[in-house]
Length: 210
Image (cartoon, rainbow, N blue to C red):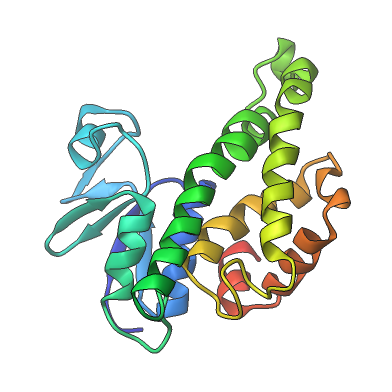
């Protein structure tokens, strides 16, 4: 481990987990915390908004100051050194990884995490029950998102080709939750199941997702 950084955000967040895995991959020592400058910061508080104007997480707390937004954080970590490379290759290859990182972070996250997984993680139905109507409403777009990913993975070991990249770091925590919810949505997408099973063998993934 080479450089100490702190990650502000809850460890159940898929994006926080992406940053944790990036640190593992880059061999950067890290700590997940809700303290900044010796003060405990509550989520969605005024102090949180000072770290991120929309009170989102993760925020990387560095010796130079806070850095927000997952893809930006991954770029920062990538430049800290180490043998592993999160955004590899020439300008086109790097842009391709950024493209898929953004697609997963924006569209896949919305369809799968915000609209579907959060209903299982934080159900808002009567007595804390899962609202099945919300699940059914979210399913078409969630399946469309998974179909797009499955097509992209056809003939590829990782999302952008044969190399593990930042795009995989963002996707893997999402799929990890999907295979653990009581809903066999992944069963129709063997490419995704193969991809997730292979990812689960990586030390970087195992260290964070178990």
